[in-house]
Amino acid sequence: MIKKIIFILLIFCSQYSFGQTQADTLQIQQTALNYIEGFYNSDGQRMAKAIHPELVKRIIVTGDNGDVMLKTIGASELIFSTKKHTNAVDETKVPFTATVTILDISTNIATIKITTNKFQFFDYAHLGKTGGEWKIINVLWAKKEN
Image (cartoon, rainbow, N blue to C red; front, top):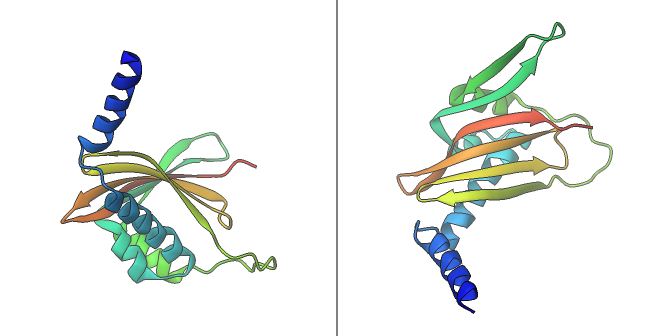
């Protein structure tokens, strides 16, 4: 019985001691959707709303000779690329869907994973709450394994 009470108290304290609210969860999800749906729809305004001006987005790239490097882009390049993005022709007529998985929220930071049914990549993103808004600050992305 004591173990059960301690477990319930730990769950209660972990959820509320850091100020996590349902509103934060919804705002984090909306920020992620602005990011990925903004890219899918070539909507630079939605992308700009989702990301921090000092965002860094990275992917690990391996060359044909085995050399490895980090390819990095910033906020302005991501917004520019979003506006120029065009989707491949999709004959399936299946609507675009995105899944946002919140892995952790602590104080004013969060870690999420974003996947879609249309893109052959996924993103791990770090968000920070600044000025009362959740913004994506870091993204590490990779291509899906087939």
